[in-house]
Amino acid sequence: MSFIGITRSSMQPDHALIAPDSHVKSTLPGWTKSMVTILISPQMGARFTQYFALMEKGGTSGPAPEGITRFFYVLEGAASITVGKKTTALTPGAYGFLPADTPHAIKAGKETRLLVFEKPYDEVDGAEPPHVVISHEKSVKATPFLGDKDALLKILLPEIPSFDFAINIFQFQPGGTLPFVEVHVMEHGMLFLEGQGVYRMSEKWYVVGKGDVIWMAPYCAQWFVASGKTPSRYIYYKDMHRDPSVML
Ligand code: UGY
Ligand code: MN
Image 1 (cartoon, rainbow, N blue to C red):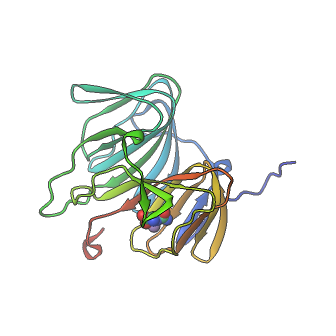
Image 2 (tube, helix red, strand yellow):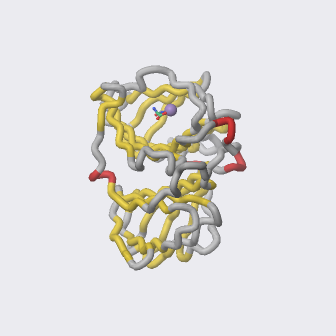
Image 3 (cartoon, rainbow, N blue to C red):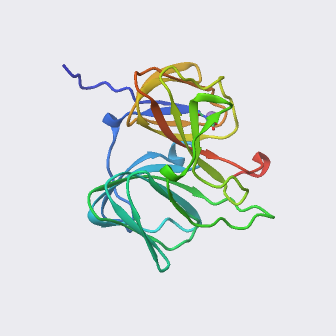
């Protein structure tokens, strides 16, 4: 029996769990034949936005707002992206980083679901503006996190000051954990891609799994154990390479 009137979703001052049963669709300017589900936003205290774009066959992306960097990751479907004269086919696992004010068009060849992160670009003296990145996670090497082969990390974007955020994919073997309870200035937005586990956020422990979205504010204590019988994977955002004393 399933019960109505309950959800695992929980909104706290320094973190949030948003389970798939709480999603509400809306639209964004310029997107055609597409709906969005805004998951994380400045309205809840985050300094970035995370959403799903649900594109019908033939649907097209709208522009990112002025001054806003866009990152997307293809969850399902088939699409293409055109930047300048170049069009690239996109399959699940493909991703793209579009620096602020880069004209581009993503077009769905069939029903397609994207995970999108957007953030106002934080310019810094001495760093060139970032460049466009279009790639696929299968061409990114996974490396053991702090030497632990049960916690493999893929870093999808260049680790240089031009890029003011990172997007990484973590894969944990069953029983794998974050090695310690992290407390840090960077905030996170996450989507669970596979598996299940228990996430500690602040003084609470949540059972989480595929489709769950998590927001962690700066300094939210965090720890994870993969508790399922198959590997767990999540993709996450983290602001990087900026001095907190001059951060917005
Ligand atoms: O990059 C990170 O801060 C990562 N280790 N945090 C996390 O997975 N919660
Ligand atoms: Mn962290």
